[in-house]
Length: 85
Length: 184
Image (cartoon, rainbow over all chains, first blue to last red):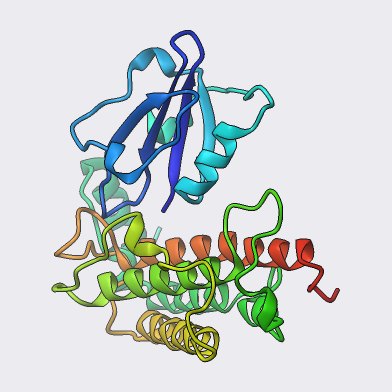
C-alpha cells in the first residue's frame, strides 16, 4: 500500500506507480523537479521499459515520495525488483 | 510414500491448483492460523502497536519533526484506516474501499478533538481482534481466493496487514524518537 518510484535522469522525469493491490491507481509521470499529486496517476499509463535499472525505491505515501524528490542529494538507483517488471 | 503425498505429486505433475493442505492436513492449517495470529499481535521482532502509542504526549500528536513526512496522528489514522479496509475486504463482498491514496489519510495533521486519538486506537484494536478471530476460525479458508477479489486470499490479506502495520508502527516509534517522546 504505497508507491514504487523510478527516476529518468536523462529526461529529467520521475515515474511512480501505486502498489495498493486491490485499489489500482496506475502510473504517473512528472518533471523530476515537480511533486506528485493523486490526479497525476492514470490507470492506462505504462512505465517505459528503459527504466529497468532506474528504480529509486518503495515509499509508504505520496508525501514520502515527494520528500525524497525534494532531497538535494543525488538519488541512488538500482534494478527494478522482479515482481514489478 | 503415503496416500496424501502421492496425490500431491500427481496434482503437482498436472499443474492443478489444489486446496489439499486444507482438506488433508488440518494440523498444518491450525499451526498456520496460530502463527498468523501471533504475527498480527506482534512483539516478536519489534515494538508492538500498544508500545508505540502508549502515553503519547497530547501536544506532540500533531507535530511533524524536521525531515518527517507525516505527524503521529496521520500515521495512527493511516494504520487504522488501512487495517480496517483490509479487514472488511477480507470478510465483506460488498465492502467499498476509500479512494486511494487520499482516503487512507486523515484530513488534518492533528487530532480534530481531544478524544480522537483514543478513539482511533480503540478502533484499531477492535479491527485487529476481528482480523485475528477471522484467521483463527476453522471455517475460514486461508488459501481460497476471495470470490470478490482478483486473486487475493485471506492468507495474503493477513500477511499484508502484518507487513503494513509493522512498517507504520516502526514509523510511529521513529517519530516518537525524533519528538523526544520515546522511552527505551
